[in-house]
Structure formats: structure tokens, C-alpha cells
Length: 279
Image (cartoon, rainbow, N blue to C red; front, side):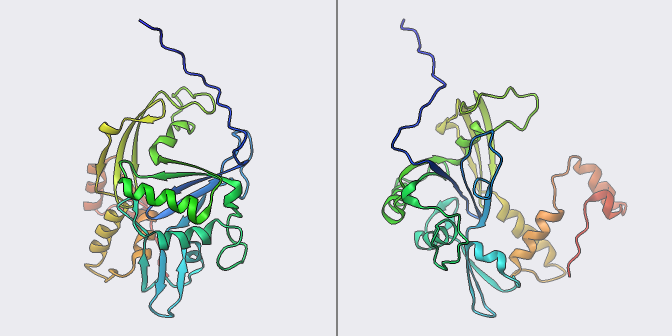
């Protein structure tokens, strides 16, 4: 029997690749983006992770339209109508997604105000994440957009969970792999905006037949909280406010039964959770 060749841990990049690599996690609710850097380098304004709203919102009051990062300048989130290019984890509206990318990453964005990441696609490599088991037609649309519309110098498309095998382990007892080498085994639970995926990884490679998907995500929790609050105060159109409440005061209880009993007995807010003040 032929002996298996040992895997080499030294990977030399081709000489024709660009010097900068943009890592883009294109989520349904937010985009996480930043330029790659060496592990020993301190984070900078470009290598730090930028969280960008992945939506186009229009105010029904002043008729103003907010594209991607423009949403952070909005002073009144009431009566905002949202349009999201990503549905169920897949980009289904590339016209809207293209506008958000241009506003967020390019050096000369639509407003020409220098608020983008300063990305020159021709001089940049792109690592783009996608949901597991994406339809081939949607993958082809992404490839055409990356090369034909933006013209990135190089491009690698992968499922989002696979990149976690290369990240430092959050568990102190876990043996840390050398830089650039994925962990041997990992079970990753990715709870996103519209769904949750459970992905087993072996040496950084996903085992596709074993991937499971649950149609349950952050949007489900937001809608549930919206229903509960609306029993006493109508917040059906206050998506942003309810999301802020969820992120500020909701948590996973380590002891659900004890917390429930404490609530029935009139436990103080400080002993159960955190208080939120709405002005």
C-alpha cells in the first residue's frame, strides 16, 4: 500500500497576486469586512473589522434613502422601510448589493466623500463568503459581479464556517495550530440573521453531506420580541428599536428554571438581567 504523503504546512503565494486582500463576510443583516494583516501586526483602521449594515433603507417621513453605512447617520429610525439584498443567506438582488458595496469599500464611492475602505479592486484580492450549499446559479451571479462589474485582481469564494478553522481558538484548553494551518476538527454553529447552520470541519474543509440548516435566526427572535412588546405598546414598525432592545437586554440564561422562578417571585431587575432606558 502506498504511503500517504504528509501535508505541507508552508504555502507560498503566487507572485502575480495583489499585495492586499479584502475579506468580505456578506451577511444578511450586516457585512463584516476588512483587509488581511499579519498575525503580529497591530490592527489599523483598514485591517480592523468593519461592520456595515447590509440594507437600503428609506424613510417614509423625509423620503431620504440610506445605503449601507449611511444608516449610521440616521437620526430617526422610526418608519424606515428596509430592503435587503440577501434573503435566507443568499444574494438575490445584486443591483442593491452592488450599490452597498460601492458605498462601503471603493476609494471613490458614489458620494465621493472618502468614507469607503479605499479599496481599488484591480489591486486587491477578494475572499468572499457564502452560505453552504448555495445554488450554482447564484454562485455564478456572484462570480460575474466580482470580475465583470468590480474587476477584482483575484477571487476566492468559500462558505463562511470554513474560515473559522483558521481563527485562534476561543477555548484556553485547545491546542493552537500554527499560523495558516487549520484546526484538525471543529464543529461550528453559525447563528445568522435568517438561519442557523451546523457545519463539521476537518482540516478546514467542510463535510458537506453532514451540514445541517435550521430556518431559525436573529430575525426570528426579533419578530418574537416584537410580538410580545406589542401586546402593550405597538412596535410592529420599530424594527431597529426592537433589535436594540434584544441586543442590550436579552441573553441566554445559564439557569432558565431559576431565572423563571426569580421572575415569578418578583426578583429585582438587577438580579435577572439589565435595565434599558428609552428616551
